[in-house]
Length: 329
Ligand code: SAM
Ligand code: SF4
Image (cartoon, rainbow, N blue to C red; front, top):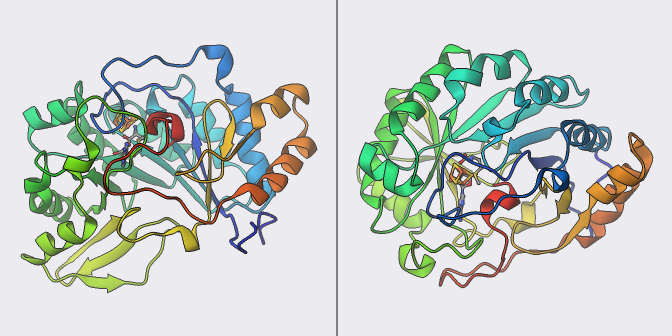
């Protein structure tokens, strides 16, 4: 049972924790080319992050996903994973990563108790991959995927953000790659987080329904009732064990079943991806170092702030000033 229930009777059982705002990539939909990152004093220490994770699991949260920025650029990430991996009550412990540092970290993460990995991959063309990520090397990410498989991670899921005119022609190639490598894949609609300089979001919007129709020109998709406590809708193909998911904040609003909250690396508990409602956990962590009760009371109290829904629109109007790397995607 979770102690975390909001005013719309939704039980919060899933928390995404951002462990850094920094990243070795600069994806065009996530960051601007020149980014200023937070000074060290403003970000939660590894101990504070661990305490936050413990508070949530003691309140009934069963799933934690570590994200960022790029979680694998945080110093001490292996120790953090190992610490959180031992929390009683944690049934699903996941990470979203760009994959480039997995050759170095995959085994430590697996040994530390991480159960699942999502790896972002928007293109299989090295040049285009470089353009979309501005700094990324596709070969490193492919090596990272293989390192994760070798370390024993199962049901690895790719995340692909599809932008019209940029990588929409690669949808079927990405599906075939997932099938060949026995990976799952989720297609994500771009969300209006932060004012990115690269493109107008309205022009690049490509809906999940369009991605789905495109895939169905080659493969029949069978709806699947499976859920990973996340916002994806899943489909199967008759001749493959790969699942295809769609995360569609615009076209299939998922707010009514939202069971998630987020903690930014500054310790702000965000009640909704698309709204600014938040409480400052860092202040409490630093005022009462090591004490669980004030932190847990604050988290319980914050549930009253969870709004009923987000109000993203497809015309690309920026509604939320936070960049995705600050939000914890
Ligand atoms: N660096 C890691 C990665 O890229 O997987 C984790 C953090 S990243 C912010 C998490 C996910 O958010 C990635 O799959 C990324 O593609 C996605 N993302 C970033 N900005 C987005 C946006 N504006 N709209 C939709 N998805 C976005
Ligand atoms: Fe970095 Fe992930 Fe954002 Fe790309 S999507 S810039 S990899 S945090």
